[in-house]
Length: 578
Image (tube, rainbow, N blue to C red):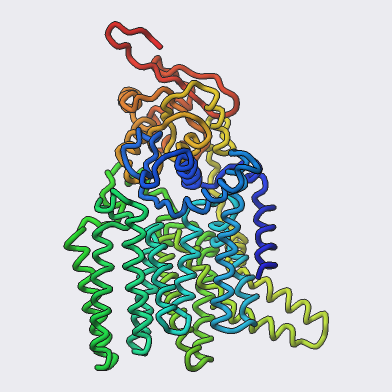
């Protein structure tokens, strides 16, 4: 397993080397995560997860400090040897690779539990070749998604272990940590506990495991919430663990513990008890936090919802994605469902029960990935051991061929099937399609990546009115403050930025000045800027891009393709111009 991890890590390092050397993080959230860690190590409080250089820190981030811990530990350990900047640089490479190691170790353990040693290598191969999975575990990808995958795998390993109090504690503890890191994990957590409950319906001997799972989940979530939120323990929230969600877990746990009393009355009674418990938990949420039924984005202002949220494809369903990405993300889960079904039919006893549980869980994960694209990585991770069933069978047949040349050819052809997502995407790409009309992304020389904005660090410190997706990198790489990033709790600031770039110049000027901005900065060619221009051809950004000048914006000469203007604020009575 270590050899497979080393090879996968080497491939990821080579593939991402240019970005690694330049320390260009792949996503705005990765930049914000590193900034959160940096601020914490610089003295910001453990319970204070607000970004104080973003809109004056007027909203707390919904993120968890738990994800900061491994990054902070790596930086602290490396600082004496490398210095602060180099320690950060190495940490953002090493920590994701250690997360990859944990994920592959759990996939190997699940495969070994299900099919023994013959299933381990094929499962690891399919996991390592899954682009949706390895992207979330690659160097520089330091946000919470990798840890979500690891914890979902750990909970699944507990689910498939021999039923006992110990396996229940492993499952419940993993799920409690998963939910504390991000409530995005709620669907897979519900699926895992739901499968554990259905297993109890079929086999009442699994009752101890189910009760320990729920008790540990609820107790662990309560303790972790207290440990990470502190004085904010009682604050309501729909996007993170909060009192209402803890109450839902508590009602579900008490209900399942009480349901143990009717276990002896048969599977129908047990199934009916599950229905009552589920209804009670749902009613608790409706009673305590009905607004959460609309999801964390349900209360966004229409402008923010339409312009900012809807274009974020990772949160959108399968049918809104590009076909090539759908093929890449869903081929392995579908192969896994087929493999789980084949293994279930061919097995008996405890092995058959394990395959049934994994098959149901994988079905739930695949449906979740169809509804929310970013869940595809977890579905791919869970699918690898199941999809490895037919890959192992095909490899065995290929190796059984007597003649050496056909045997080698058949083996190589079979190994190519270890990446079904890549094959499916390549097949779609090979289909001739009508060429899309050429689109000029910008009328100005485009930025290469977010590092082009680092030049702002040479300017006197101030407030930068920057695109939403670019703001975290500006905060990370310069001493400036900013107005809004892509964080829904700051919806008002997001609306202000959208207005500033898309409204007519007079309205935009009011929005920019209301943000007390010292600079207006953009990176031409960014998709966000293209969207603003297309949405508002006569808006401020479209007119600036065409070269129009405004007396309240003074161009600032800087190196590279980024564009910066100094915002001229109106004179105060008795004051003077800056």
